[in-house]
Image (cartoon, rainbow, N blue to C red):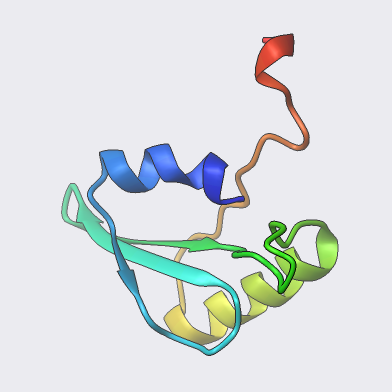
Length: 85
């Protein structure tokens, strides 16, 4: 989700790049001499974040295809709520 990724994207000064016409967003930058790519699922036509296994699977497959990463991490809060700590 965009709200989960925003603090990381901002703190690492990652820049959005255009890769596909899909709703997924791609951010890149260099961190300690390593290239970092962050994919965010984007929003659907109703303005709701694309979530769950289908969006994650497609986004991961496209990310691997387009960037050939050495490491893939799937990071999120899995439905955590700030009010619950």
